[in-house]
Length: 402
Ligand SMILES: *Cc1c(COP(=O)(O)O)cnc(C)c1O
Image 1 (cartoon, helix red, strand yellow):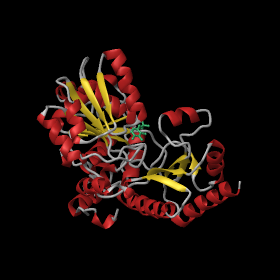
Image 2: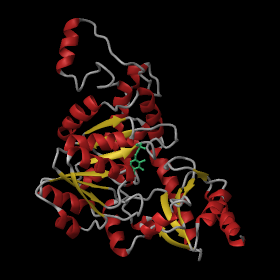
Image 3: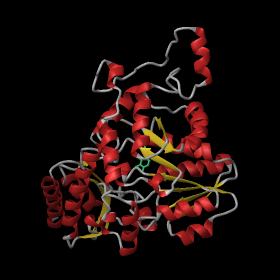
Image 4: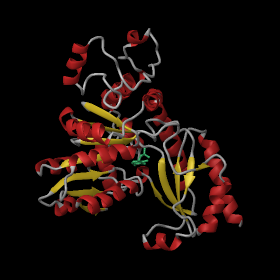
């Protein structure tokens, strides 16, 4: 689709730039240091016992013990909340830590959850385990249309959990419509917003209740940290803080928070570059006759494009495509021929990555699950796009001549 038709939201991009560049940071608190300090401490001591007693009444807002609140972690939480236009953010030790925190705080035994669109594999696995251990009920809806969601809402449905685009199939669901439907049934809406990042999509402004991030990907952006975040209203954060953050306790360390702060400094600029590079590679792949099924919202159908214009401001760089008539041997040769694209399973950082779900021993399972044996997944990084394209071009030449 034509990127120029995506709404450039001046208010959002100004807000993002102010947040990331740190215009509102209180440097005077840290001797004027322009780079925020790492407050590497487990506890904070008090000047007298009355101060300690007073602090304990306001435990959620005071620096007492770093599992609760730490200044470096607090600083990055405020930034992520601001990027998502949310009231409150809490960070966790990983994206899965954030996902489990949001689910555990919002679901009780016998509650029902709808998993809409293709959501992150380990998140589905967590819900499956919760079904066995805690009698949670769930339905997986690959068809994320409003009509289909409506049909599957039950009296005990408590949560609708989605990703848009779904990071496997890149299908788009209408977030504003889902939020509206959920509100009328008193259902909590949760979205994993890792793929678009807050730079390209702000689900809270579309009516969603809770946003989750794996900060390990674009927010961190340098493949040097594991972190997660939950953003929501102050009211909805209370049970997430009291139960999941405080008691399950998978909190972020000050050092990881500091790395994340440093990554977020350049987030808007990095996302623009990821988008530019990705579009160039998509255009290149689209010219090839030996490539089919490029899964990226850039190639959305007209109906999805209409939704994209309502809710997205741009595209990031994780996507997949199929090499025509490829088996494991061909896939292996293609991947090994790539030198700029490194082989690895994460995504969203400066380095470009390549993998395939085809591992040779699972070709039959892939065919049964309707996944092409020639599927390749790329995470487009920040290298020169011409370099990336010539890397892929050489790999295509190599498998053709074999
Ligand atoms: C990686 C990922 C997660 C999990 O994040 P971790 O930081 O690895 O725990 C969640 N959702 C999506 C879409 C991801 O890609």
